[in-house]
Amino acid sequence: MTEQLAIAFLGLGVMGAPMAGHLARAGHRVVVWNRTASRAQAWAERHADADVATAPSVQEAVQNADVVLTCVGNDADLVEVVLGAGGALAAMRPGALFVDHTTVSPATAQRIASEAEGRGLLALDAPVSGGQAGAENGKLSIMCGGTAEAMERAETVLQAYAARIVHIGDAGAGQSAKAANQICIAGTLAGLSEAVRFAQGQGLAMDKVLQAIGGGAAQSWQMENRWTTMAAGEFDFGFAIDWMRKDLAIALATANAAGQPLPVTALVDQLYAGVQAAGGGRQDTSALVRHLPEVAR
Image 1 (cartoon, rainbow, N blue to C red):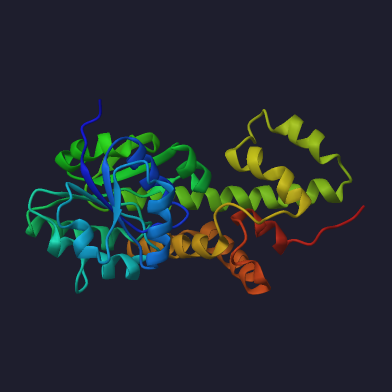
Image 2: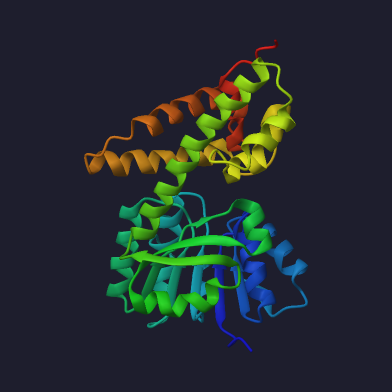
């Protein structure tokens, strides 16, 4: 039987809410906090058969926790929740573990890790990949940065909603790996967008093309899960372009600071900016295909 831990989960968005739910179902005591309190209350009501509670503030949520997890919006949100006035680190008890699932810059992750160490806390940056479906199904891929001790402490907790957990390296390494992940996705979707429009313009049966090329070297998760919906012009699901552009900005800024050119990523980011400006910011990242006109043969 899994050892019951006192866990605080901060941030109950489309990713955080199901992740916190898996922890509750795994038998842990889970206290949740969300900036919009009604969302935390609704989450607690959905999990009323488990050992759960809500807290009115970050500090009250974390003060008795063995493990504190965050999944918020961006760097500024995370800094406010963790390091700001009334932030999590100041209220955590010595020896507790802090794990962040937000996608932020490696520099922010390193700043938090340094502050945590100074307070006698363990810290892990642990961004995730797999999207909303991965969170709901407990099949996320988690890339981690931090000490070996923090990783060892975190692993049994992360197993509640992960299919793959990899310790990449020191603080910030998890976030750098997540940036690499987003670079790969952006480039893949750019090629997939052109392939979809090319096949449509040639008058090909789209299901037959997918059947033919989906089992060869061109195959990817994006092709398997988005080819058909891209061809049909369906984009109201998955990971939003607004969030992808936030992540690509992190990748581009981090690479620029290190003197590393990312010409393809920079181009795809600008293509996304065009789709965003046309009203597609909340659509799935596969809406990148919208930057190319449909050509009827």
